Image (cartoon, rainbow, N blue to C red; front, top):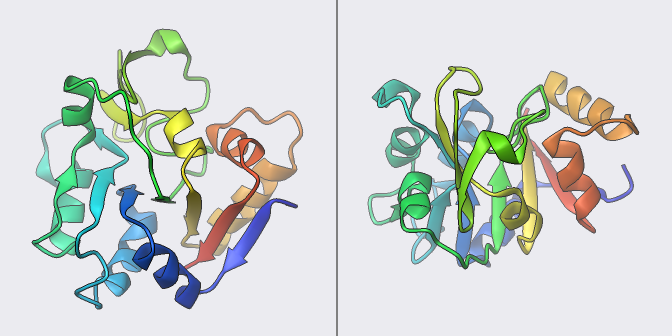
Amino acid sequence: MSNIQFINYEYLIERVASSRTICLSGGRSIKAVLVSLCENNQLFFSKKIILSDERDNRKKCDSNYHALREILPNYCDIAKPEDMWRSACFSLRVDLALLGFGYDGHICSIFPRMTYADVDYRGCFFRTNGEWGDPLCRRYSVSEPIISNARSVILIANTKEKLSRLEKIVACSQSTQPLKRLINNRVEVQIFKSF
């Protein structure tokens, strides 16, 4: 794991503070970290927040947007991936991608075995043509190149099992999971262990 660097909480705060455009994933992996970061009410002030992915099932309980809306301060404007997809956003520079990841090696809503035929790209975002993930539903997501080209990428490992899974994915030379591609495409990926 030569291009992986483990970081501490103070460094994480510094990265958030110095970033203007932040791409955040939803999900359980990142929730506790965001709650802790939001104890500093000013940390997300004047930041452009982009939600990395969303489920298109219209259930509030499964919505990444509603989960972030409950955590982040009210002054934060959160750009939804479905709105970015509909408007065909063709230019997006992300300072910080702060993401969880799945046991299967997915990031955002970029899943293993997903091909170009499985998605409808509009600029920097895509909508899946079918149902993916758990829960199984159509999804909207930022594209892999946007994440790979972010100025900084910090992955949140929220359990020992997730960290172990990350290490196995990285060690497997045959792996084609999105998580492995992200790590291979970058000079450095930072990991924050939240357990």
